[in-house]
Image 1: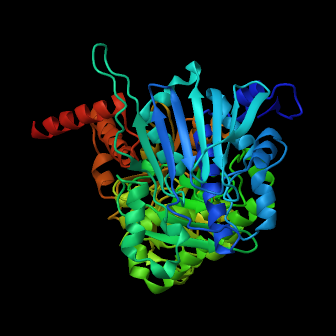
Image 2: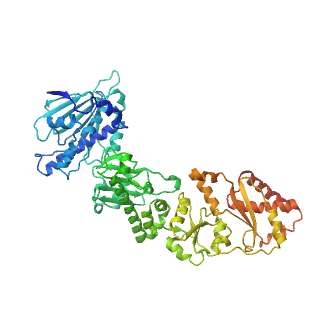
Image 3: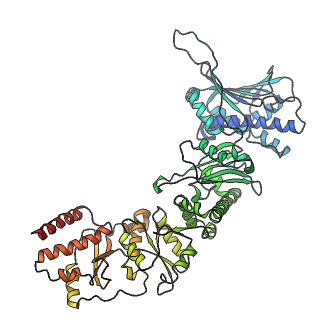
Length: 622
């Protein structure tokens, strides 16, 4: 029997472990099960190269909860340890069994590190016991420690190859004596580990007066040992990918498509990324990608590993080049992470281009969801922007899709302004802006729909990145001026009549800054057209969502230009109206109709418009 002190750099490592090793104490179970998997993988490797003799038997890991004894036990049938190895790998915390083994057997699939990973057990335990039998020995060893630097180590009759760790759960960690809690941790962190894991509960405490028993409940296998991302794409069917998606996200609709990642140089990366259906912009949910390290769950906060614009994707990425104790500072500085990030961007771009070229009709049907990814990527990643220009599509108000180059060709003649810039006309609300759209269509213009959450920012970005291009919303000016080629014509009214009309339409509306002009539009155009100058409307939109320096604009009144169509026949009658009260009400109603088309007539002003309309109808009857 050997007694001694654990050789560490500080007098007592356990308070440090309990406070600082991991912020979340449930991680202890991930660490211990990972080590058990590690040991199982080692024995497979040694057996395959002839260094471990005899039958491997069933390689499995058992997690057993004993609520009566207040213990949690993790048992593996892996490589096991000799007394010397226990002393080296457990007592000498500075050494790592996995590191040394991996140096010797570089092709082995090693997960974790004994050292500190093992000591995470003391975050939740008053005492830890370890039984182990090496594949090289006929007898076993026993090690125990109560959380002080003292330990005991001696030989015992432990018949099964492998290691058993018994945790005596402390009072502060009583939550880990709940079977459902243990099951949920195993499901979260160990769901796809490559060695079968079984969880069982024994020794449930009986109510007073009942006969006590230690009846073992039925064991449950909790993991899928062969998830699709470790298999070859050529072996998998569409159903395999869709079924795995359901396993990850049971309540989601079938994904649009997926990308299988499989890289072994210059870094190791496997995984499957899914493009989910997104019905509405406000339904966007990030942080749905799970990061694994050799099938051990690490985190679902994958920012820096996955490009920001692809955080809407779902699925799994697995890389042994990212350690289990992953941290933000590590991710931001690691060169492999940057390479992985760039690789994922390239794979997504290649997949989208392939779909666009081979199945364009189907691609266009999925654009409502795909557009968010593509536009966000074009704004934030210049390399993606270069590729995405080939497969970005824009839907016009007639339902036809155009790439940017196709749109420029279709509008080459009509939609270049006097400076030679291409004018992209767009609508943010085809129903509300229908009158403006129809006026554009009559001119032969092609109007693009820009209705999503990202479109406002996308427009501003693309004006800076696309040469000789600017975007104008259909209600930014009267249709004759939208392309900025020439001013609208003169009206048939005299100068005095124009001045009278301008004075009549000089109305004051709270929270609006109204400018009035009289122009000669076509006779079939509306009597009054309300427009909102592009620049100021954009600044207000940016201020509303961006804050900071632009917040000032959000507080400013909406700027509206009322363009009175002097060629409309209604003014021949309205200017001759002798009843000034009726005349003012008619003018205000015409103005309100124009404002209503812009969604700017609200509250009391809308109520007044309704009441005034009824009064005018009653006056006509009289």
